[in-house]
Image (spheres, helix red, strand yellow):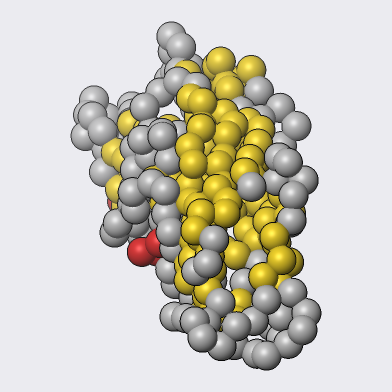
Length: 318
């Protein structure tokens, strides 16, 4: 019996951490010949069903939220692995079923019928769960997934089944073309010293955006969030990372205040770490931000003059 699963096109955010789950698919897969295998209890030799891997294992993958990270199967695509969890009749939950010898329900698997019953453990559809896992860097491009993952043997008949997976794997990402910042530099209105009354926000917020172009993702259910990581440059340094506040930089003659950057909805945008901003739109995605002056010193220490501040940014897709 051959079981062939088509997973369709699956998208992977370009910068998803190693160990991330790409997809989790409930399995109820018929075999190609629509055949059935009926297994009956025997005491000696015991009736066993083994499902060894047909491919190498991907060792040392830090699979998120998984106890069986040592059971990731390699596929034919670098950076993509699979975990297969078996369902009935291999879970030991019924008398006419196989109980896993090591209490693990993942491939590789070996189970034994342990209860004397006249009912067969019937194998016709393969039931369980398949998880696709990111196991390492994935080269750019579209890839055809096509690999036999495991096969099945009984103690009396030898090989009785094989299980293969196929589909396409694509990465979700965008491009930065030209100067993607809508206002570079972002220009604030002029202020007088009277506007600086005490530490905290000063003046009106100024909106701007970063344009992500040629965005590629699932058009019906996008998988990737654009993340941004900001840090000071050109003499500007981080003052309060959690509140998105950074200092004036090279070329400034003013003093006593800095700049605060925020999400488009006005929430402070933390600095020096990747922060999720927006789920990708296919084609073009605009990341909206705001900025304003932020007083750092008492009003008597604020000095008038030219104010310049700079941040550098890195965009990632997770």
